[in-house]
View 1 (cartoon, rainbow, N blue to C red):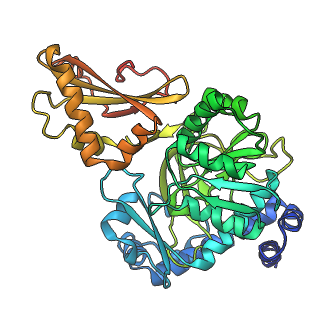
View 2 (view 1 turned 90 degrees about the vertical axis):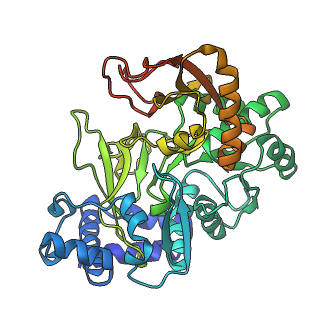
View 3 (view 1 turned 135 degrees about the horizontal axis):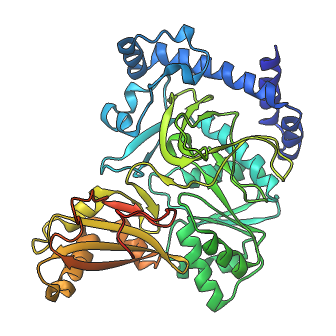
Length: 449
């Protein structure tokens, strides 16, 4: 009965104005929300076991009787991975007919993951996003310009579905050069700007020179950002920069910052979050189960993102749980101004450069507010370094147009450092291929910037 009342409150909230929705959802006590999440988990698990080829076979092979499962932790060591999505394909995960799809290259493989949805799911997620944007201060008289990349990516559709409900003025610019965006967007005098963090940093550098205009806030997602870079953006515009946390697999709707900017408020209506294995500080890989997706549910999906669950009321007054800011990745994929890069990217960039050795390491760091990727390679002699740099840049331009375009937009800088043959690995040291130094403590396996 209690779960039904919570679901009724959510249904009403999704069909009314954002302000009224906030009031309705505010009446739901945490215990009632938790009961609803568990009920939705059990329902999702049963549907997946009955209709999804992948889950039906996986549960059969593992001897899992879903009728006996009441909590995700009871599934033991069973998880769904990005590799499962790539190797099995979306058709084996579908439980109903899909009418839209997106892809993600946020992976350590060159093969993208494809994720399917229904337009009804998109509309519902759009309403939840609209409620949150209303909390941040977005109103119908605001003017929004979005610079999210529209190529197979979910983010511009998340924004669009939310703005359809809010009814504010909206221009879709796409991810174009920040200088061109500045010149063209300025004519519309937007009060809110959406984009990827590295792109927002570049736009702010341009605004520091050419002048800013009044903004209510900026909203970014798709990458992490240092607090020093965030501060530089906010000082340029005199407005806060809020961050969203999501993945294509979740329709970009896992969580978002409030005005306090202290972690992401979790979307507990749509996802069940876990950190099954945590360190002494509570940090570990976040795993989530979709609770309201009717087309392609995911059970205990491994995000590869390292964070911790934060419970208790936020200073903003909202009692929903939060995710701490993402600390890093547990695979070797790094999200930065270059894009979503993993070892295979640099393997491909270096392919055919015969004068260098097989050992290399890419280290991602900051130089001021801009991401810097330092590619460490080995050569017998330093005399050919200039030629190697030229070959690597040519390879990047020819093989990875999107990554090259981001370089041309000054979203990151790529540097090449040559080392003597055999020096990178040292005394039998394990060589990590791609390292995100922006979030890390000292690590002897990581080379300096």
